[in-house]
Length: 487
Ligand code: HAM
Image 1 (tube, rainbow, N blue to C red):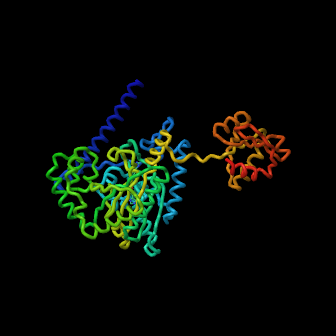
Image 2 (tube, rainbow, N blue to C red):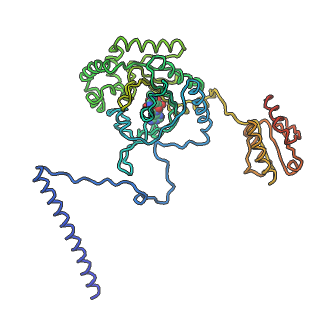
Image 3 (cartoon, rainbow, N blue to C red):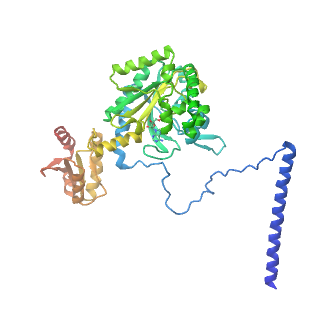
């Protein structure tokens, strides 16, 4: 009996569910019919997008993985990063750029308006999402647009011109990860606002070229001019005419680009498209007299400072905001066709006004740090790296609790005097500390044990000869300075 009752109850629930379902279906049908009557067509029911919240993300207990196309910067690479950061700081300052930083998250419209629809960056690669308040935001794919926004927002047109920035930070593009292409990558860049003069391009190119040179990277600048908007309009009529006659040979993307953004066809890496481009009209032939003169002056400056360049008529860059000069840096020893650019930039005289500011000419460049590091890593493997790791010549070894305490004091006293000492306070055996000092290639070890703590001395050991001397702790600084002047 009891079982029957339960069965009966169950079936009632099932029945109830059916009833509810039927009712829902009825409602939808009714709605659709209503809509049909009103507008004469069926309006598709909108799918409600679920936003991620901390409660609807499945967490599991597996160790979370690094996202595809993202990288950790590990201690093994810190040598390159520190060299690049300090050189970027030094060279930017020498050329008059001032360090600054803008946020990683910006209004999505900033990049859509500046980089342009029809570019790969905007159409395919932006990390675009809805913020909690519903606004459309984006992880910056580059920093130029952000600097234009900052220039306008902070009224910098009223400052003495040019206003010059430099920056180093992460950018985000949802590209297909491959060699030299990541979804998060770092750029070192410089931007100059407020002056239109060929000397500005020459200064930017010199900064970039000498940055690479000081890192020991021989590079060539590939350069072109896109002229003014009017120059480009005339050229585009010619280009579109040509591309239409070759439409059948172009990739699917480029077929669309003919009407959407024809200049982008010139960027295409597809081999068939590249072949079509060999015979395409070249923008340089469509430049007005004044655009040509402006460009010639840039080249003259480059000749004057001995910067090697190659005129590249198909170089248009992948972003829509450029006018006049555009350029890219390529490593010399590698075929330009098969490699990624180390950096690139150009003039963008219209962008400040387009984003709502006063008419302000501007130009800049940016390098991809990971690409530069991959060149340096290769050079290291080939024994061609032009700089070495700047490690201390001294190692401080300690034995016993009191010695370890005194060590911390000595490390700080020496640091204040500008002397850095390698050490490992985690190791307690003298043998293992000496092995480490040897591995690091330190010239001298400073040894401190219980007796030395009490005597106020240290033992200074020459790692090569094994000779040892006892030194008063108060005289350690001058003793090390003497040793430094000899090694
Ligand atoms: P860009 O050519 O798009 O220009 O990027 C500059 C550099 O960033 C490239 O030459 C490359 O080294 C590096 N890069 C770009 N995408 C990736 C990626 N997915 N993975 C690794 N590295 C990458 C700009 O971003 C402009 N804002 C440059 C500029 C500054 N123009 C005027 N001012």
